[in-house]
Image (cartoon, rainbow, N blue to C red; front, side, top):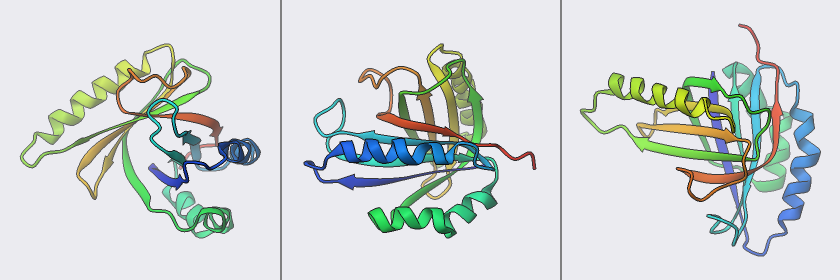
Length: 187
């Protein structure tokens, strides 16, 4: 598996309706994509919740890293480059993925923790997998992903929730504009 996120900062006066329309139009084109588990089209809006500015982003979970690479090097990603330029792409190794009972997602939360030098990494992983299961058991959870950022030595948890963005939830919250679900390959 392979996970990634890229984000585009937009001007404070940017018409986010354009972004919502883009997600509505492009999102369904991702449904049924081979090797993709999900793609979340997400946003933060200036003056709403924790949104300190306008931001448009995509979070992907791929079952097949080669299909993720094909996307990045192919025509589909060219649309991103043409519209927003070349983004910095954060990439992670998935460590634990749990499906929750919710049937869709309205919000996405991203939490991250540094793995300090000398830390008992195996114990930390075991603790965070237990926490993943607890998050997945919540009625509003669609899915939860625990991943390792190998470049920055940190753990990242992505939670997709069926509830709107709430300030009291841990992590950075985003509105889900569209959640595309692919066809995870079996190999």
